[in-house]
Image (cartoon, rainbow, N blue to C red; front, side):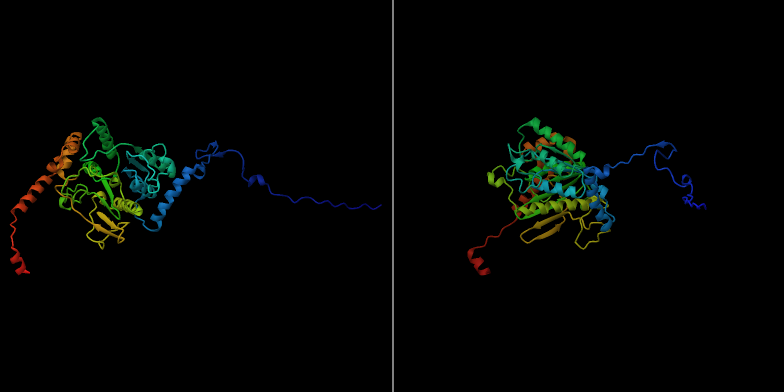
Length: 401
C-alpha cells in the first residue's frame, strides 16, 4: 500500500515582540528616575466653582484678546471696593463690578429690605422683606456669593454720621465712625451711593484725606450725575478736580428735617439708577486703566487725544437727562472754600479726627467758618450793600420806554 504524504501547515515565524513593545502596566519613573505613582488633578474640570472662575475670567480675557490688548484685567480684579449704600444704586453697581471681575466688594448700609425694594433692587427678593426685612448690607453680600462664589463680600449694618444731624447716641456714633474709618483705609475705591446729600459729606472728607478714589452717583426724577472726586495735586493745584460739594456755597445740612414721609422717598424713573450705575462703574474702570490713575486729568473736549488709553476718555463727571436722552460730560475744578475737600477741612480732620467730626455734626455754622464759606457770604453781602440802585419815577420809566 502506497503511503500517503501528509502535509501540515505551521504558523509563520513572528518577530520577538519583547524587544519592541514597551510595558504598559506597573509604575512609571518620575523625573528623579524613581518608580512612583502619578496623580491627575481633575478639580478644574469637575469643581463647579473652578468652572465658574474659568468662565468669568475667559469672558473678560476675550475683550483683551480681541478688542483691547492693553487692558489690564489684573488691576481691575485686585481693586477692593467699598459701597456705601446697598439699595438701588448699590445693587446695580455691585453687579457691574462683578461683571468686570472685581472680587472684593464690601457693603455699608443700616437699612432693611422693604416690600417696595425687590422690584428695583436686583440683589433682593420677596422673601427678604418678611419678618421686618433682612438687613440690606448682610443680604446684599450674601446675594453676591450666591451669584458668584468666587467673590469676597462682607456687609456692615452701620450708620454713616451725617452733617447737620446732631449726635443722639455718642458711643454708637463714634463706633460707627471708627468702623467706617478703618473700612476706607482697607479699600481702594469708595462708592457714594446713599439717598441724602449730607450722608456723602463725611466719606468725601475721609476719602480725600486717605488719598482714595471716590466715585459718586446721585439721582433726580429723570436726571443723574456720575462723577469721580479729584485727588490732591501737589504738582499743579490749579488743575485739581472738584468733589460733589465744590459747587455749594453753604455747608451740608439736614435735608429731611422738615420733609413729610412721601417727600423723604427717592422718586426716580426706574431706569435712571441702572444707567447711572453702569456709567459709574465704567468710569471707574477707565480711570484704573489711565497711566495717572486717580490723578487723571479731565479731557477738555470729546475730541481730545486718548493717548493710547484702552477704553477711551476719562471724564470728570457726566450729567444725564432722560427727558432728552442726553449725557453731557463736565469738568469742575476744586473750590478752595469747599466744605468737604478744601485744605482747611481735610487738615482739620487729619489732626483732630473724631473731635472734628463731632463738632461738624453738632455745631451749627462750624463747617462754614472752617472752610471759609462764612467769609464768602460776608463778602457777597458787603458787595450787595455797596451797590447803588437808581430810583426811577414812573414818569422817567415811561419816557425811557
